[in-house]
Image (tube, rainbow, N blue to C red; front, top):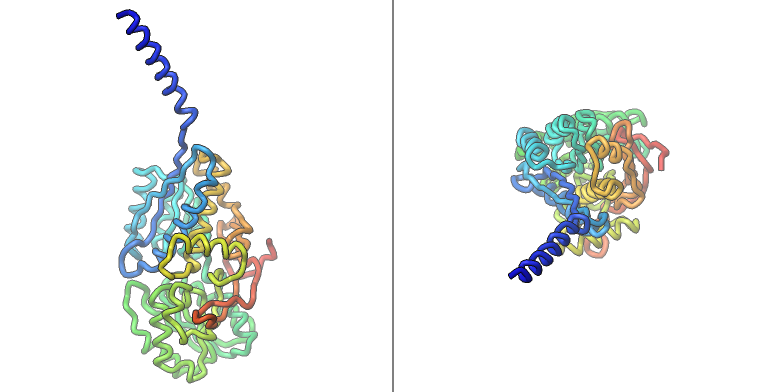
Length: 402
């Protein structure tokens, strides 16, 4: 009996020793990333493309994390433009789920509601689509890996005036990004010698808009060019078809826009109506940059439904890239202050969009802006970049930085 007890004790001691050693060998640091995105509702298209970018980076680069460190995505659905829901979700993520970082926000009103929550909780917030300038001003814990409309519209206004357009009309969706892009275009176009002959705004989503009355008013005014902004997604196809039905092109009235009008996942639906259309943007999935080819390959390995990645996808990829770099640099252990200090200085030469960097003073993104033209190649409609304005800040001004 005594022998049996001795053997059991030895076995138990060995087991206890093994258990004691497990934490050192198998210790896990879990970094929780709270995702607030639009997964349902009438405006789900943009959320879907953003989610694809998040997931593509997350699934492709997990092997690069330090040993014993994992990233967990805690995803929540804001269902569309609902700032109250977005604020509640952000509050729950930081107080109940104890996330270390927030990421996402398709819509600017939602991001503006999330930012103060991030500030109060001292949790970094990475904006991967919402474009309104004041978002980063609402919280010193917020950075942007997407863009602003002024960043794209100002260079476009300068280009339009210098390429022979004398008069312009602006037609934009009535919310912050629409206003900011319009104002930047007007200033650039006017400074370069052009004249603005009219302005109109469209009701914002989720309103269903009949564009015909607005476009008829523009046609009667007969400007040389119309600067158009509507949120990306099916609404872009709707306004392009309405412009064709009204006969703007036949009246020699040219449309130009930022990239929202012709996102790569929607451009095939626009079809021949878009050929020749000039837009400004920070991304085209058909760009020949090596980093973009690698990005598209990773995306297409996961998503085989034929939808091309677009700027929302690339912006979300960059947002996850910044978070992964933070986790790798800190081995997953960082305070909110340490996290935002790192993210505020984040930069990379390996974005699908080209070189990008966060300005530590504004926490806005500086990046290339490309002028693109829709062409048909190999039976596909593509945004072909034909001019690069290097390293443009959030106001649309080239910085000369690299």
